[in-house]
Image (cartoon, rainbow over all chains, first blue to last red):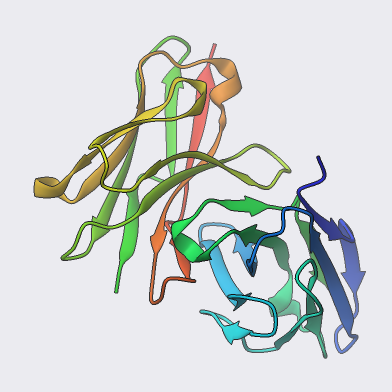
Amino acid sequence: NAGVTQTPKFQVLKTGQSMTLQCAQDMNHNSMYWYRQDPGMGLRLIYYSASEGTTDKGEVPNGYNVSRLNKREFSLRLESAAPSQTSVYFCASSDRGANTEAFFGQGTRLTVV
Amino acid sequence: AQSVTQLGSHVSVSEGALVLLRCNYSSSVPPYLFWYVQYPNQGLQLLLKYTSAATLVKGINGFEAEFKKSETSFHLTKPSAHMSDAAEYFCASPGAGSYQLTFGKGTKLSVIP
C-alpha cells in the first residue's frame, strides 16, 4: 500500500541551484497538490492539479513550477533555489478536489544554504 | 473566502485528561471541515470530516468533533488522552476554490505522563 510517494526525503541545495521534487500516487486520484510547511504557518498550497492535464497556482507559487506528467505523477521544480524556500514539502492527492480526503506523502525536507 | 482559525498553538494535557482543540471557521454557508493529524516526521492523515450529514462526527483513535453553526466552531475532543496522541493537529476547509484546501496554523498536543 504505497499511497503517495515522494522523492527525495532530504535535500540540501546551494542558493541558485535547481532541483525537481518527484511525487507519485497509486490510488487513481484525479487531483494532486504541492504544499509547503513552515513552523507556525500551517500548510500553504503552492500549486495544484485538479485533473490530468491541468495545473493552477495556489497561495504561494512564486519561485516554483509544476508538471502533471500523467495521472500518477506530479512534480515540483525549483529553478533557482533561495534560502526562503527552505521548508518541508508535501505532496498530496485526492479523488475529486478539496472536498474529498487528501492523502499525503511523507514529505521532503529541503534546506537551501 | 472560507478560512479556519485554530486557537492555541500548543496544548498540554495529562494522560487520561480531556483533550480539547479549538477550530473556528468563517463562512456564510455550511462548509466541509476536516481535522488532520501529523505525527513527528510524517505526513498528515485524516482524523475526521464534516459534510453536513451530522453535526457530531466521529473519527479515528477515539476523536470526535462537533459542528456548531451558532458558534462557527468545529472543536476536536477526546475524552481521555493517551501518550500516543502527542502530535500536531490541523483544522482545514476548502478555501478559495474547491481545489484549495486551507489549513489552520496547527495545534501541537503534548501529553504529560
